[in-house]
Length: 236
Image 1 (tube, rainbow, N blue to C red):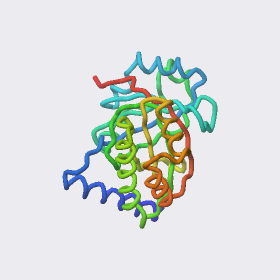
Image 2 (cartoon, one colour; image 1 turned 60 degrees about the horizontal axis):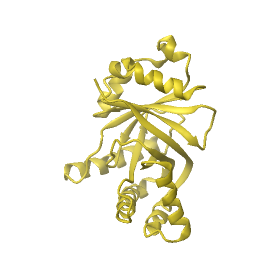
Image 3 (cartoon, rainbow, N blue to C red; image 1 turned 90 degrees about the horizontal axis):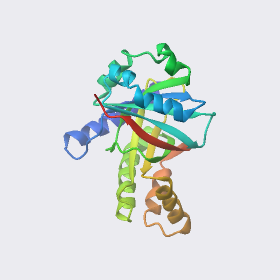
């Protein structure tokens, strides 16, 4: 626990230094609630048409991510909410208890766990087809990893993929589920766009391949899945 606390504050100090230089911005903080939903479409539409939970927490936006591959259980998905900062995200969590949700919600999903996230790299709120990797990074490699992630995004965009972007997130209050790892989201508009990147890499024609390989040498991948994400709430 002491080790991860050191890693967390090391990475936050890197972020704060960059922000004060005016070179980077972030989209604040996010919360996620992981659930198992037997009928994903019905649950999503219920959230879309009944935004009371999002309004209660003060979220500026919210949506869902459905696990498309790499599932750990049937009906795997998460509900995400965006906030301007960590303080707002944590306070929002005290204003709505998902365990005490109205019956119309409770009957549609089984709760797994919730967690708050701090975005550590510039992140655009444009949900799409997303590769989600949990990566364990040592304290001594954090700065190089952060720089490498930004370099990789720039290289991929320069190679003709302007709608690609990365986000790095550190978990806060994730229990034993999200410990000593960073979550990296690599986002494209759709599955085909993501697939093109993989085809480029495996064909040996990706100009950005060396940047990706160098980045992955700086950490240990713990999990890897694909999610289809969308926004269902745009603020009150």
